[in-house]
Image (cartoon, rainbow, N blue to C red):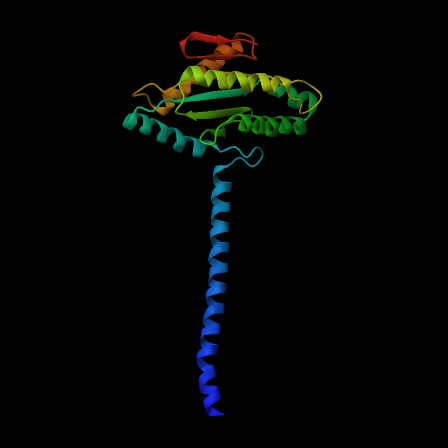
Length: 205
């Protein structure tokens, strides 16, 4: 009887150890999942799923640093929904939310895996296009503009205007964004629903 009990002790020990390791693994996996979810919530806009401005600042800084080291091009597209306040006022905030979520999904459907979408204001988005020159970024912006005009998220058409700028060697992220914002202002001034970018190139509907 004693011999049987003595032989069973190592078996019980290893069974308990194995069970403990399984529980620890489950706990660590759960903690890792929660940590990733918290991080994701910290850098994303909850309505659209686009990254937020804080994450954008870090990504633009990385693009500037990368160009300084390797000369890799990068461009940004600043998108603004035309007459967004009118949409909210005339059709309600639910319609405005539908436009924001729908536009974000539309833009993501056009982007590559390395491209990044950020929501930086009520109706403004920034698209970061690594390894992309300005003329190619304008093509992307024009495709987004055209697809937006064809989409229907409620019972009225929606259009966007865009400003495009390519990162200039030695330029800061702030200056880079300001040029995109200046081009967006020109697009708005010229009648909206159009793309304006570096080189004074205008892409009209």
